[in-house]
Image (cartoon, rainbow, N blue to C red; front, side, top):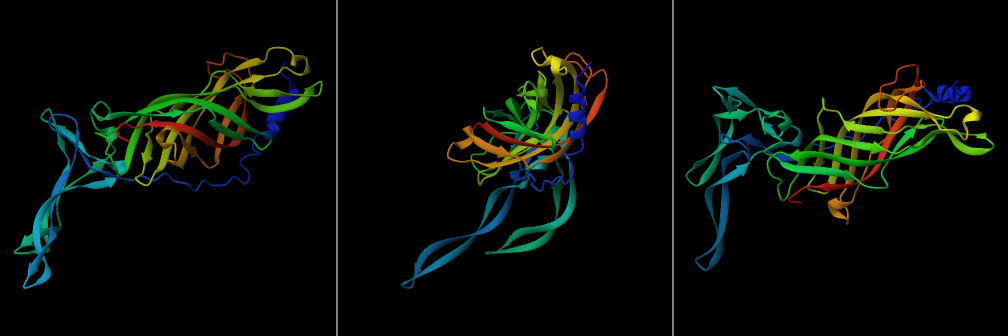
Length: 339
């Protein structure tokens, strides 16, 4: 028989955390990245176009300094939001072809020694996420985010506030090559964070000692959700953001009434829930090897398993509703070749 006090404690805590919960206002910036196009021989290359600009040179005329103007044609790399950085492609005749439409747009043309803007028909490309392109990951640059010691996820149930230590590495890639400057976005594709065993609810039922009546089981994990894109963006001004959607497996360990004070905890199966973390921080003196990322508290809801079971298997019995506020305070090391 499980401890009735444990059930009462966690049941009364369920629903307390969400009351008056603040709404997160932080949003990860998408940044501005160069447009990438799938090359006919494979690989992603920046999409270049040409335009006309004025160039000036200093000269002496009749004993005084003047500036002579000339019109030159220069290449320009197109930019767009890092969230939709790549040109869309379709497969026709066994080859991938870029998708575009013909539209009348403003273009700069040369007329004598002047630049004028006229309306001309031009190809306007359609953009989408690079992760949707074939070979985007294999032709990109590997990148990773390692969660360093001292990182925690804060779980506030209203009745208690637990700091759960986390560790692990999230891996992904940057489409194409990493530019030496400017904004750059990495797509996170795989990785699992390990959550250390932590007390969720404590009491003094064991001879006045403060002990855990309910704690997280082992292993408690948070893995990247494969059905949704997770990304991290490094802006040129040093701001680092991340949008990570994690699938969390949460088993519990329960103390069995007062008689279980010195006995092994009862293990349960895990319950699952997904949570999106909007993290942000700024690169400091430690560079990318030590960056602080934090997220605002967000509402979360899952079930807590109260039926004995194996922690690596789903819960096979009664679950109580558990609502909470969840946030993260992370120290991370970012591996981004070229930066």
